[in-house]
Structures are given as structure tokens and as C-alpha cells.
Length: 302
Image (cartoon, rainbow, N blue to C red; front, side, top):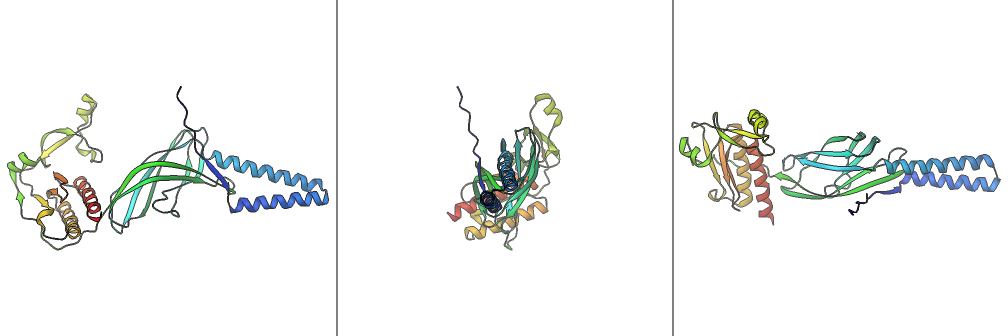
């Protein structure tokens, strides 16, 4: 028989709750001193309100699950943009939830105004991007003080995901002159251009405008169209050939990646660690290149 996983919820009175509880004690003492039934009645009403607040605050987190999170690659000193999916498996709406990543900041929290019953809320958030590299996150915490603000309830999650921060692009070196052109380039590297060549499997994060939807209807698989253009300029960026210090070289490569993207130049990337990015161009190629550069920065820093 499969053992059900127990939901971990924690609750404590906050400052307002402690003050409210102290007020209840004072009213009970006054009722006992003066044997006043009206004060007794008021005291029991306040106790009942206190208990209802505790139960409702705890229920506001019940059956709330973390689905997934995604991050965009950020620039050093910029802002990390993220998106979080929360799921409510209960039959009641949840309100005024707060989630945070303690490893990023204990003070920085993000609000979710409403999580519908049996539904999902998609939450956009952002925080400062500091040091370049690949940053690991293992803890996520969901909190609430709803409805009366007297209790603080929280639910911890163990997670495993990363976000990448690439170094700022710096350097004034010209783009490499090792330009590959025409059919020999396409035979060796297989880039994208304007003439359809073949299909390949879709990779997560790629734009959808090259997806072959007719092929998807036939095979139930996402395939993208691969294009060629023999007149496109193609460059191999090799970190070994820069003759710069490692971190200085990575900053220069970021500068080149930006230039290639803006000028629609295809490029391949070879890093000192042996990481290699095949030839390509455009925003998706840029995202993959910047992620590899962030990984390389981590290796150089360790």
C-alpha cells in the first residue's frame, strides 16, 4: 500500500496576533475580577475570532503546490526575469499569497493576489542580477497572513533549478576574420538561411515560426524546418585564439555575440573548457551562447 505524502504546513501568531491574544487575556482577567458576564461574552467572542483566523490562515495554503519555474538569462548588473506556476488542488480560492526564494533574498517576496480553486496562477517576477555565472536554487517558500493578518503561515518546497547571469559585453576587438562561406560551410556546420533544407526535432525555447505544423499533424511530433543561405557570413569564435585573460575574453565574446545577432551573422562558439555551440544565428542562438558563457564564467571562478 502506497503511503501518502504528508503536507508540511507551519503557522505561528505574528506581532498583531500576539497583541490580539494579549488583549484577550486582559479582557478575561477583567471579567474574572468584576464577574461581568458581558465581558465574559466579549472575551469568548474574541477567542472564537482568534481560532477562526488561525484555521482560515492555515487553510489558505492547503493543497497549494508548486508546478514549475522558468528564468530568462540576465546580464550582470541587470534584472533576472522569472515566471512561476502555482497550482491549487483544493475547492476553495486562495488569496494574498507571497512566495520567495530564501537563497536569493530573505526580504524580497512576490505577491499572488488570487489562486483560483482547482486552477493555476502564473506569476511574473524579477530580482537584481548580481554576479555572473550559473546560480542554483534549492528552496522555495510560500507564505500568507490572510485573512485577518494575525497569523503567519508558510509552506516550504525543496526545488532544483538554476538561473544564468552572463557577464557584460566589453572589448573593442574586431570580429574574427575566419569566415566560412557557401556550400562547404553548410555541409560542415548546417546553418539556417532562407532555402528549406530538411527537418529536425524541435528544441525547447526555439521560436515557433519555423515549426512545420503539417508534419506535426501527421506524426504528432514537433519538427522545425532547417534553412540554408549560401551567401550568409559565418564566423567561428574560438576562445583559444583571443590571446586575452579568460574573463576578459568572455566579456569580449559577449560583445561579439551581440554584434553578430544585430548584424544577422551566423556564428559557432568554442570555449576553453571544450564546450561547443554549433553554427547558427538569431535570438535563440544568442540565448544558447550566453548560457554557455555563464557556465564558462563559473568554471573560471572556481
